[in-house]
Image (cartoon, rainbow, N blue to C red; front, top):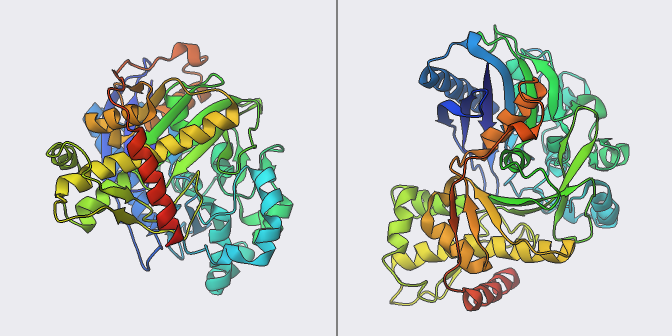
Length: 489
């Protein structure tokens, strides 16, 4: 038996084939294009995501020496909050998807109606009013693309996050579903009732008829159409948003377990069990997963919008390095940051600051500043953003995180791990398999298909543990002053 796990991230799609022992036996990856039509706008062409999915799955099958007939179950995980529209019959998309990083709705949310609604919206959804979430993106489409929205209201077009879009493509349009973890990120979903909330739908002017059916995170959710999906004839038995999938992939299934994924952004999640922790407006309460019997597990989350994206910007925007892996050697050419502090608000600041208007800023440049100082300041900026989240989360829950589980491409860097440990003053753990997002999708799919009876049948291979060596408390306090100055600007 073989599980196909599809991880549709922000910049590319990874496909893994996982065996009954939980081992990855084949992997494929395909990037897709990022579109920036205006400053602060970020878009994807859904068709390019689909073609990258096909390419990644094909490569994974080839790498594993498997055929489509070998796939027993399918798991899906995806970039969250990004919203797409597609034709129910043709599956073609009339407009680009608006990506979670997109900030175009910041002014829209300044309207008095949203200021008056902010309190009850957060209590209902666990989410602050921010362009990050899907809700305001849909209202923007309604107001700015009326010819497209007419298709939504007429029933021809469906609305969904990327998990829903992939399910539509995999099933040939037969299924229009989303899982509870993705639904909880749209800001249209009630955390307590675990369903779409009519009051929220009215606020953001979204017709319920266009939205997908909300399912549990594992079980028999849908079934692929082999004529649309490479000849694969298998059930979709696991789905989750990428950060919830990574939490599950780290087997952080007990209350209090925490992890941080360092990808395009950095996302810290702490399992809060059956309790919705909604006491700190700087943090997000979210669904972690819902079991087939309807029992929810919740999480407390902090979202850093720019982590690995800062490294990509140094590579692609400033062309300071030609490959992401060159940043650590460059940072090691200097002993410290040389007084350089980077606020990587390239798409605004997420939690715990929640400031969509602030932009990226660099402080402390002198004639003696070298490229290495920029590189080191970037690693520190990522680590300091995560520290600010952990301090807020410790205060909200009332107990400290004593060890941080990490994953994601950025922590391939030993310097990043050391900088994070030094910043936090606690050990930082990295698993042997950094692709815990994909493994989380595979674990959910395996449970949903009955391949594994429960999480006791699963194990995460041990990796490395990085202990703190020198405190960065002074640097962190200076960085906080730099954040305050950038926000004032």
